[in-house]
Image (cartoon, rainbow, N blue to C red):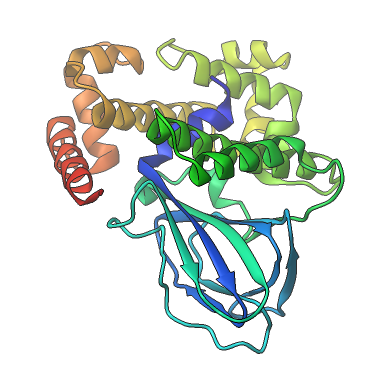
Length: 319
């Protein structure tokens, strides 16, 4: 798996939520801050205005995509002067279904929005996502963001006419949309000569080669020299370059990634601790348990039980 796919699979928890809402002017909807979540809005039809809390209004038209990586609050309305109401359809809440539809009756023109939310594990916030801006706006335009448009069209069609397998299809399309949005943004960032941080790390052939190696085979007993060889650099040159772009030494990042991967395996599988330890590069269950407790503050078994209880609660709340 590539780095971006890995990051999303480790950070995202539970199922994504989505809703297709038809608004008829005048309308205004407030979306409160949702820490530990990421959300998106797609204008399927019509137009509107994004109303950030501390920035000027932004005009929206059919095909525009908005992504809020950090769950910051905002509002959307048919006009900057329209009063906004409290949420009527909020995909961030645990009570929301995988996908829902709603209509707001009014005398004016219709705007159809596709909105959604993803639950993220704030305790495992990957620096790649922490560096994202408050808002990613992908404006509509001929030939722009073709993959994003295709995912949106498929998602909208499935929500309009749910068929057999709709739950799995919608969930997969929501994940696909998230990855397409992020990939589109990172590709655009790579073209910026002033790019820094993780965008620069992913664009750097040497560092990205080392990151790819660690993500593909976290169990391997990597050394800085071996990773440097994968990057085509000397040990010292590689360590220096990796530290500047990633923000921490290579083996420190490897340890963090191994334990983040272990957390996902504990949440999503019933594999024995010894098997998980081997998958993430620990020679014994004891060494793994000690490292995991230092990182998470709890033993692996207790972490798994807590995650299982949370999943059962979410399943009970889902319609």
